[in-house]
Image 1 (tube, each protein chain N blue to C red):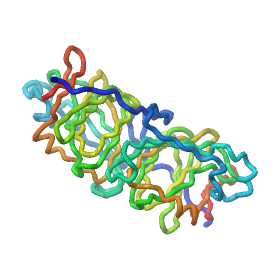
Image 2: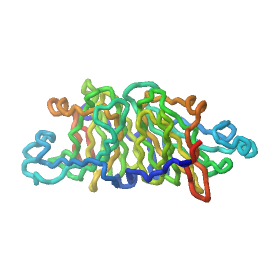
Image 3: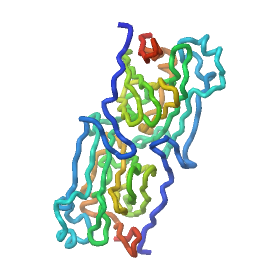
Image 4: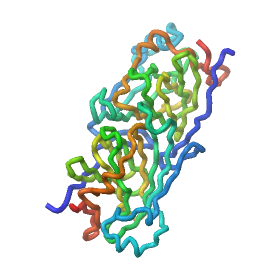
Length: 189
Length: 189
């Protein structure tokens, strides 16, 4: 044999839509009923259709979670909507290995990436198609959809980063993204 | 103050073209004269215009090279062309921290991603718009343009990966991508 083989790529990812073509991806979704006490107005949440999808995630995990030096790739779609005047958003998390970073990038729709450091300082960054966001280590992050269409964004992160949802679940973020006078406003909690 | 600030994104990256809009990126290019002994037919290379650009790279380094847990983002453009019957390509490298991975993804044009493990086994994978490639740790990688237009691809990799170009510079790859009867063929060295 004088030749090595050239293979077709195993995974396709459409950067214009965030859609995977692969049997190697893993999907999950969060319905409104899964997001107890995530939004400030719990009464408003309970009056809404509990089975509506707030966001879903598709991921490509080419190696085992926890592997040092590896990388994961994913895409999140957040539907448009609000609980009271608070925009639909992801739960948000620190990384379990807290000093690991992540890239997010906007694909479709318009949102706000909400950051919080370990001292409780929050700030936001607008997310739109082509925006590229470096989430430094030790920074909690969540994303809210502020538009009328699904917000789609990509993510790439270290396979040993892990997710610490508990800290946010217990203490929350120090800010909430609300619509005030028609404008997304990052209000101190 | 009852509000936190929402900022404009600092970096834009057009996923359809691979173009950055940012003053935070770093660029470099490789001319044909920089690629001594990279291609097999050194005589053919010396007869060509030495100042033509074989490939260029734009990178976004949000943290210092070597930082554990951080990530880098880049885009490479390889011009169409051949040295003899060997396609224009990148030098190729292992990572200095050898067990670190990398994602490549095709943006424009058509190419072949050439892999080589530490035992000298090589294989290729076609790269096209939307192809997503996981380059596992301990695998050397280089990319060749097999089309008539520039090949553009993105990359995301750990900021402590580093580059080991010396091993490839000394030992080469175990295969070369050549045009044989009009077809890209990964020929054993």
